[in-house]
Length: 371
Image (cartoon, rainbow, N blue to C red):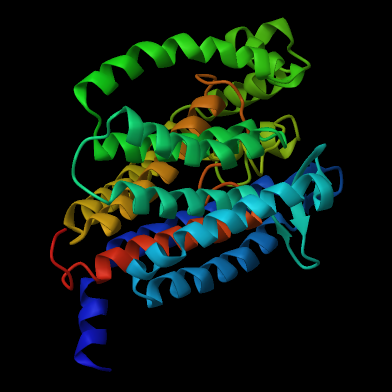
């Protein structure tokens, strides 16, 4: 091994890698429980956790790939990657596969690929390229340019319809913009304009999305319909109490009262089985996990690497916040999974790839000068 290779390994954020592996292990363990349901003749287990293990191996391969090359090369492919992503999103309405009533996937035979997950990586790369051009806070012109770039893929995703992923793309870019900084005039204008514009979103929402918002405000208004998910989730988490019911001991999940227990509401299974102590322990792991990305963004030796790490931070931060918020009934149900805990092939691969990107930045932080 050459001296440069040894230095790359020494400077890699091994703690972040260990935390990602721990979260994935906890997710597979939780999926094993979420995959099961009690029957008169014993316990039956679906294959969700087995597929998750396979996708985890694929994701690990993707993570290694994202670690091997110099991340600065992403600058040169940022725009080609952006347009490829747009083309894939355009192909979804025509060649997409419908699952659970929504057409969001492209069937590759052995794998259902979700272009909206690629869009999250793309928005990180193109956002980092645009925002790393200089140090100055963004004025109206630059902000408008960045916003238009992010709005194109986000609007296409929302029209699938996938409101959660579309909003996530905009939130990632919005976090990166705040990390870059806005002029005082722009910040004050946005602080007034955004709250005024949010109610207009109601006009563009589908009926089922409106029902979710109404059920969020008052789940009891439709306890067997739109409010059912939130009610059962709150029951499951509350029944876990302090220490939980133990592994495979959750009645709400094992008796199949809790819907989408392996995807959007996977954390409810965890909370029922491990209680308040277990849920807070998982939240603490997530907080340390996010902090490691903050450290990487802070210590990066060039602006592009810093914005990449910051973008990955916001990618995970918003998903964790929104998923836990909707499971607890603090936010409307928008279909955003919990990273590493929820079941999903495309999401798992992307999660590991983005961890590889942050590790890439941390490995090479000694090579370049700031600027």
